[in-house]
Image (tube, rainbow, N blue to C red; front, side, top):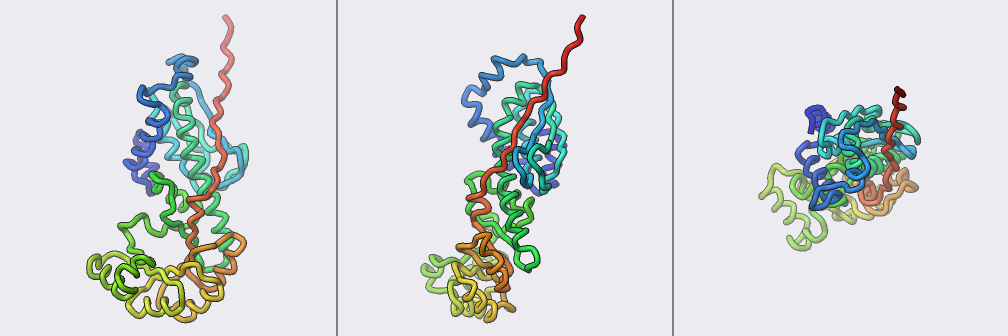
Length: 299
């Protein structure tokens, strides 16, 4: 990848090595074992150079422009220049040009689908997230994502949540301990499970899943300061907030929709986690439009 693309990825909080691995895997899938685009090779001269526009086909929020640039960089046989017109996090309208790309025509066409797949996916997640952020405006609650991500694309999808205005919960099983029902059963209860995590990984944040006021109180009394309130009604959440709200951060999850988000936020919880941000967001339709070749002067 070019230095400018690497810098843009780092500025977005994305690891260039991770992005390169994802992009190379996606290109390998498209190009097959012989590494070829038979249509472009057959129809486009190797020396031909063109400019194309990356265009929104629907209203939404864009995310992943630097990732798309990485695709063009890694698919190109010669230098490709990508000039962003929009920025990640921008709200865009149907017909808006998001970026222009100039380079070998074959390379542009070879990279097209992979670049658009990733850009459309990330922009769809950002667009969906923005709807939740706007629904929570005026409340203290923040919308979080979950680990319900597309295998292999977690880094990109969680970045897209941030671009949409949401926040990341935990990146994986390694950075935050989440004591869920099965852990409680296996360890013999909330107290034993919590203490074991603290003993083995004293520097790792711990969150405890609770399903009742009694469990919430028990978790706080053993030292937990971050509770996941699973599948609770707004009425039950209000009781939990009253019982432990000043001693722990509270996250509500399970059965949340945009139609009910205001009711859940009004309970006083700090976070609403929504798996649908990453597992059910529709893509934002985005296209690559090759500009018509300029007429050549006649002799």
